[in-house]
Length: 380
Image: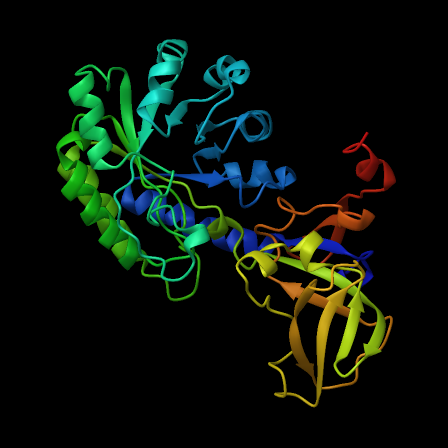
């Protein structure tokens, strides 16, 4: 089967592009002397975990279910961070995770005894260094952010209890989103300025995710210099946990045109949905790349792309084409491996897309299909 033959809608993972990304990340690990983890919150297509595990050190999770997935399907280093852990899940998390990172001193105090001797304990920092411009929803350093301990609260905790850091072996910061290494360098300067007196007391430093390492033009050598600087200055192991960089530009969403509606704007009704299948289009918002298309007015035929849900605002964007688009035609959205299948939903009873893998020779295989029971089992 080729990509033009897969049932729609369908996420198609391009294995050749995934391998290209993994080779870049593998070289960074080797040259920088760091350990890179797959952040499963961005990409959790676990049929590819054996391949990813040949290049990366392991996985990182945002809670128990992702932690179980990483342990079961990759079986290498398994890390977890959550702003708040559920008490009934803590023992299992400590049993299956190599690093457990807490968001606050209160969470650390509550669960320290259940983690000591089982896992390496970490604490997330907030360096209060914002580098993301207008996207406050994705900015962990936005004013009032709940993520990480500021230096003021760090000092207050130690004043109240000089033993507050007992058992802590690592520090963590995550402040980036789809950014280059110049922003990491700037953030690292802030981290060192505010917390450098504690980094050297630790065994490891986790620099989080948001590193667009595999994007064309990313300054890899600056990243390597940053990692080497930390290792040489503080003598700690360094972790990076990108999600997007692992599967960046390595997937497609194949969709079919169901109808064309013209109520003043020519609109294509697709069997794929922004709200259901690529929600970041509405949350960011952003305009996803579409194969063989242009900006509105750039090509001969301009259309608005929408879906078959009842949400009036379920709009993917405006695109132009060299030819007229008709019902039955196929469209292929690009860069659809990340933050797509992990965030999709069945609003309006819309079915979940099939999952497929395109092998390096171009052949495709369906690895999972979903139906009515997958919709119904989430309800009661």
